[in-house]
Amino acid sequence: MLRYSCYYTSTECKYFVDGECYENYTVTRNSSSCRDHHAGYFLNGRCYHRVPQTCSPGHHLVECACYAHRSSIYTNDTCQNIGGFYTDNYCYYMEFNCSGHAVNDQCYSTVWAVMLAVYGRPM
Image (cartoon, rainbow, N blue to C red; front, side):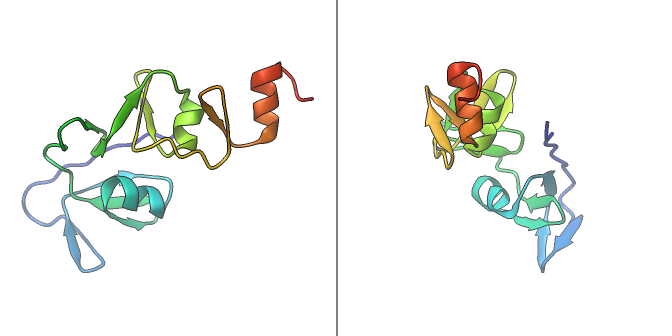
């Protein structure tokens, strides 16, 4: 499981990346996750960004990012497949955007996983 950590610093510039000063970084999977969830700069597996002090009303601040939705019905795999962050039995996500196969309120990355989930075995 991928773990996220947020590193806080003082008001002085600790992380100077691509001509910008960032207060902290979060370990993340890819540049789109960095851009979409943190509005940060992705470099070598790290997303350099500024942590919002608060989120918009109705949003959830979790592991240094704001998320519009929180749900306990999604599995960790589904949460990752829709670009969310899974912790404490909740999936925090911006929108249910399944690029794989959506079946029974879950998002699967492969047809094989769908068959396993629905039928208990590949068909």
